[in-house]
Length: 389
Image 1 (cartoon, rainbow, N blue to C red):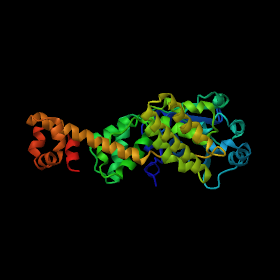
Image 2: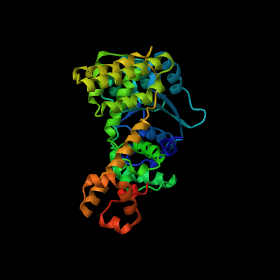
Image 3: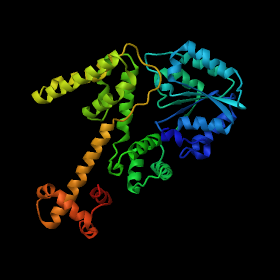
Image 4: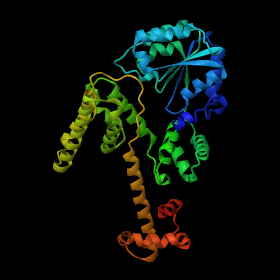
């Protein structure tokens, strides 16, 4: 079980940082049917939209009936599943909550069951809660008019830190407080991302030395992957990575890691073949300085890989951060600590930094064995930890 599921809050009192949202949800439920029949919870990823819906069901002793974006692509399926759900009483609980999760996962090319959903909102006997990261796309203009809108804000890093610290204790992790603070800040209000990072990094021997990247880069790459893997190839896909603040080598690793989650058989082989051609062009570009060929990298990575599938994929897929990127971070961080220690040592004993780097295996043992030397050099805690590796 992922830690996000293992530690998902079950009640309102367990949800942190969304007190105002809880108050408004209570009012929506209290006044259900008097003004609006549906509520849209929207905001950045990891702010607790789905957890709030499940906590609402628990507070009301209600059964929760959940659909996601893939269900909305099929009008007949939606009519056959959701319509009976909003008309029939729950067999297990006193009431019922209808949850339509990640509604903005529907692409521009798929109208699907949105009109059907809006028709069901008009006649539902039970509250409908809809979640979305971005509800302001023009395709949702009619849906917005039929629903109450509730924006969830990014969670304060101090709240994220308290949650991460509590999970660390329960999982028996011994983690530097500064590291937890850094992880919480870099999550940029995304509690789910912080928990996922903690679980991933806890499996690494020297997780405490990892410098976490900015969360907005991952948000952009997730959206880009979803479009390439889920939509039909279009010309505007060619520039899809222009807005992703990430080196092309990292983008290649993200695609390499997640292609098997979406493609199989001939599609898988074709996608990897196109990915390999990207690497070939990259080598030629840098070797021969043919910078005008950079456009081919984007074509192979975006339109090319999107065209490898026979039909657009439906359903939700959880994309993973490449494990090789984490290892690169670890290696880079080791180099950073090594350089900073050698710089301090070189200044203290009046030798060149290059010499200190060459003699580091010996210098490391000397510094490691004597805490007084560590104090003299004013080593940081993470530098001292690095010496123990």
